[in-house]
Image (cartoon, rainbow, N blue to C red; front, top):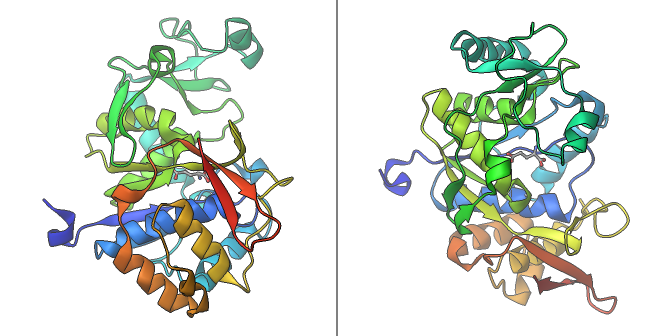
Length: 308
Ligand code: GLU
């Protein structure tokens, strides 16, 4: 059914609290927000704090404060992955009981020596699960999908067929598992996020299927890079976006997303600017590239972009 007519659109922004929002994460937040709101949908925020060693104290609150200052108001209660551990374990056991999982004793070093891709060697040796990495058997791997922005996406056979990790040896649940379980739990229908997550999407599609759930719609926006192949880092543009002057970063983000914002948006109040962006959102104008390089022009308040 057309989500515009049914009102059933449910989107989300799922930041990892490894630092404050920077221009790169603003792109994902804004695109997912505008796509949801332009279709009269709900927009949820989920804090992906499952990888506790990488979480930075205070970052979640700062991210939420920044979204608020930028006029991106979320619907429903914020979900924190760190509070969902029993839910994840329960669903891991469902897959276990269906004989979809196995324990793997191979170390990272061994896999690296094999060329970096795990060759599913432990699949049939029935190791005890305790203190081992848990992997899923990919009996019918997915190696392509249709993306609303990028079109048909083909993923390499070696990546697609690798039995990937759902629980790490140190007991942490893997991103692939928890992201899918949360998207299922929150009834997410549309996922709009950065193109750095194109590859893992096939693994996530496989899991939606294993849990007998509908696969959401995927749209991957270009990644903001400092140099080809390099995500933003602290050394370049990844400084926190300015919470006191959202207009400038919002204007740049709209330009980055191909929305052609008029210059005088800079004079509007944040909520007026956001209203303009929702009414004028056109996902077909988002550049169909995986990366866009940011080039700073010292004489201009805006970034300049170099499409790759
Ligand atoms: N937490 C992930 C990140 O910050 C995003 C996950 C997702 O959108 O699926 O990169």
